[in-house]
Image (cartoon, rainbow, N blue to C red; front, side):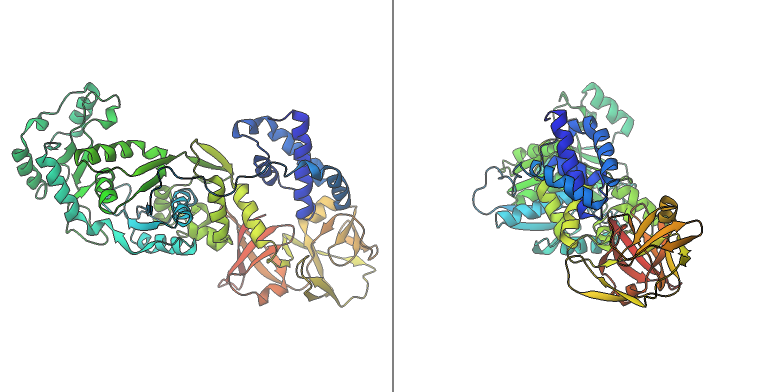
Length: 555
């Protein structure tokens, strides 16, 4: 880390910059995100987090003009570190590369697993390679069920993210006979055995490094036992790989290749009851589909070891396997998990797979994110070798950059209260710019009643404030006094005359009610806009009560 004094100056510069860009108010998360571009390391964050809070608080108490003056003297401190552009090179690229997307259809893709799939897609684009889309729909555990809607949700997410994959989509549930063929080969080679031991005994054998008695039967007998699996009850048999029972990792000792499941499959019903586990099906498919590079999280390292073990049995060439470090996105309140989301969606606790608390691709789209923002976010993370923490504000900053120039501004008030203004000037309407950088204006009619938010009233009682785009007033007890139309550099607050009732769905699933200026009635569904001094939102729909519903994206 740079010397503490230098960091404080850099923090101050970014806080001022962020405040100037957002109506005089900086956001701590945005400042922290910017510091990563200056070389801040994740282990250094705790040492400066209090400085960020204190500096942002001080900056936000300054007038906008004062912020601009201070930033002028500090602006040279930021942006000096050259950012890495593009993705790093993949190892052993010879000829056309072939990568794969391999989602398990237990629900919608969320921001965490979408990162790995997008990384594969970006590398396919970088090398002009081939990208296969294989839905990994072999039967999972009863706790991790296949969800029929996922067959639509996952391709829908890839399409929105502009992922270009080879068609048609490949379904593993169509390839069971292929897996059976290679299971029989591996049994014939004496490298796998059918086991009828219970779970307790298996765990004991693994712990002690003791071979199961089922392992001793010769290949011909194992083939007979394999055929019995297709008529047996769930849990009666498993097909296990013969690995070294003294392997230093007990979890790698005689791992399961196939098991019996009597669950009904959404696509093939009860046509099959003997199902391969992930490692076996991918060991076969990665070879048969000609995969050259596998990019996966390092949480799947034991699965990679299993694949390599099977490739060696068949003397197959090995694809290049790259394990990316895990990425934790800081600043997200909800726990991101497909299995958790599946449970909460099915129970009705969440409104659906696009509920903002799922952080699914569908929810991000509905909140007002652009696919380009997620693509740039993932490219910025790149092929990280170590586990890293990335603030969610980094994603917000990218999306903000993409939508800020396009999103028109509107007034929104939470907990509105009416102002009684003494000496109210006779003004019928005012022309308001739709965006600071656009020439277009809209006419806002001014009626007898002007409302402001209760929060603005409570925070500024007894002070002079500026009603944005209008005039200054001094807020008094239960009323306000007109104090001129000069554009003084003082606190600016939103106001509304004619309005519609609105609700805003926040990222934590809570609704905020309020009013918005009547101009929002002309918005098209899906429009992304900015409620001034509140944040970016997307117009979702008009509900049965006649309220205009918006989904919150970010500040």
